[in-house]
Image (tube, rainbow, N blue to C red):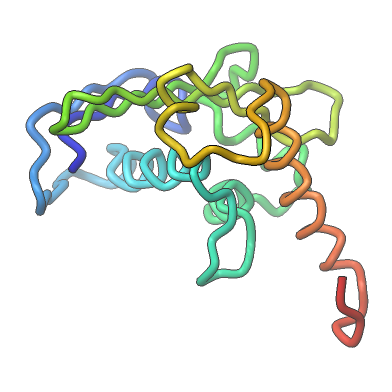
Length: 163
């Protein structure tokens, strides 16, 4: 179970740490305080384990990017993930579980590239997931990007064709 979360440089959150989370948590605050962004941080961090949202049939990253108004295309929409669009910084999401395990999620921006957003996994995160075919540093990143790019390709193909 998640015990604490720290989020930096995500949407309207410059930096926040919340300790003492329990099985049921209620976030109360005015509009724009960061309640939804905090939930998006947890959802986004879960993409390291499974980059695809099976219920929405799309990559989790795409859902977070376009959920709140990303209508100017992918490149501009993804910039909105960063606090004041300061894309030179890494988005940081750190989670501590009751077991004591600490997992760190980092999102990197690739300016001028359609390579989406890179994920930087700590050694602890690599150990936390089931072993994949091979665990070379770029493998998970490339796997993640292929899921995103393939999902986007499907939107340009007639529904009668299967990929």
